[in-house]
Length: 378
Image 1 (spheres, rainbow, N blue to C red):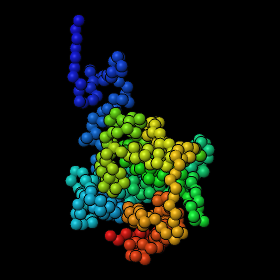
Image 2: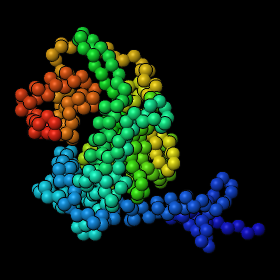
Image 3: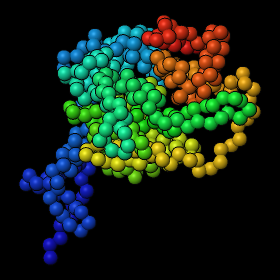
Image 4: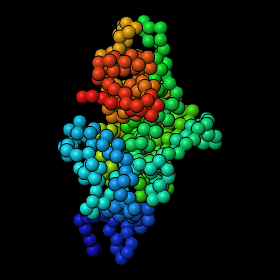
């Protein structure tokens, strides 16, 4: 009898005479081509990725300076980067680690900060598709739009589409002759799912995109690409380490304060849904894409909501003004209805709080109601 043994190799895949094999239970078989290619990409991931290559034909003038400065200032405010003492775009990119091969603009920088709002011939995958379908299939559109641009701008467009299109949950506020409407799904959970889609998608697929599909019975957030490094849909809802496919893009989202870096995004989504008495979403792999599905049917709370405290008609909860300031600091372009939807408050309550903040000099409006932005003094 001849017995051969070999140590497990830290590198994969390993081929013998040009053929790679894999072990499945007690059988050794030829490794499928798709598996071989995936393992090869993961092996090269540390040094060879789509995001860390130079963006040929792009220079600093084609990036959104406002988005760059906003990202830097938010990162400084959160203590996630030191103030470089300048607001020059090249220095901001250097501080964010988005320059490669000296001072060349990386593809990650283009994905995060490109200023183009028209289709980019070099980067057609910087795309968001949103749709509202009639019924539970894709047979008939009620609304269908596509947008090109940087990840932060596309994420804002996706959020606004959901705020405008999602069913609302209404309730009569105790002791007030007023109805309060909030989106059926928690806005913070949707924001986390969208951020994950933009951070972890496979940008190397030229025909790829992030898609938001709303049906009568469910919401699907779809990002092109697959799960890597052994992650499975089931593992995402257990404690796991963060292994971003686009670490440069993920690090910038973290510094902007949109995500954390501890692999807790899906766990946070599940917690937020359960706090509202809703079923956590289901993650699945479909046609080389990751699909996060939120049910719109199981909207009844699983436990009785605590009794709301009695408030006078003119009193806004103490925490609301600071919540408004925090939200507008991170996204100065929001309208008041969008602020109300994201905070789960009535529009009247938000308008009242904003008026008090402006009178106290703690919130300013720059420009007109349409096209302007908010400024939050420290």
